[in-house]
Image (cartoon, rainbow, N blue to C red; front, side, top):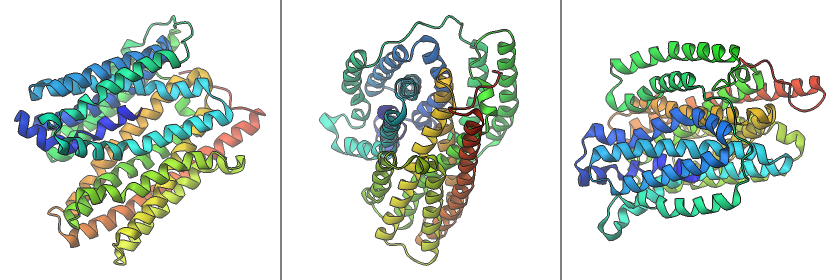
Length: 463
């Protein structure tokens, strides 16, 4: 899981070196960075369904093999075009392996053990985005044996080989393989719909939001409607839909996924905007920009294990309370900047509170969702949750990053400070809205559980 998420961010710091050594054009550089993200986001739901149909252990190992071999191809790529192709394949492998992790946790752990496993899951995700940028800078700067940027990909090869051996020995064996055929029509239509949605979000900001980006956004809506129609027809014929759409009609699931998408958007927006504010606005170093986030990452990582020891009544409210704390941290940062408090200590403290809140929200939402659906829907929930994270993150950077750059187009302390203040206050407002949705999700789940007597609400008829 860590490798898959690190490789989303690790390339960003290496793009100048890649451009210098491979003579890549601007468009090729964009595809080297975003080709991975696009494939990763588009294939998560399909990959999760493959795990459910063919065995999560088998698909994890296959995804890991593809990811490792593609990383080797990336590290040895002699031309920008081959590097783009290898990155697309690497993203497909990452989607196939990471989508099995949450399914594995849901199927193999119960009660306190599941809470601890989800706490580790949260801790891994907390550090991967920031670590990717840090380790990428270290490896590029080290220029090991004159290889410049190549070690950021080649380092995955020995790690992937070790994980492959450990996985074969440690992962529980899969049960009997599913007998139903894969919903290929659903795969094709959903992939097209997600591509139409994610592609303009990834490339639109740097391209200046040309007409094709808005046409893609508009076309994504009928594409998703078409997907719903395809899935309903598959269900009526007695087949296995790619997604059990009835899950999205459950209020505890729908509210929680929307809340998590919103909080994820604020997190990735913060990573982008904070780096711009500190480096282009306050003229701090990249090292300083990374160190400021240490408190966020540390607090994020410990929140899951710490809150897992809390009483049950507190754990039920973990997600809404954590989201509320995140919103208060954003609001505090924006208010502090407005009042002229720009010291690193002040920022680090509030970022620590924000990391603690987001960690609690993330861990609490995971616990809520895995408890709100039955085990036969584990692959559905894994695909939906991970896709929600990726789309939310891309949307956060595209939306809030664009607004910030419009407010501070040329850097400068005054414009950057104003832009950072506005964005953090808006992120606070988004956080408050997400907290309300999270509370609604918890309330509806507790109501459904109470009505059913015990356990999660019984499933509705699959779409």
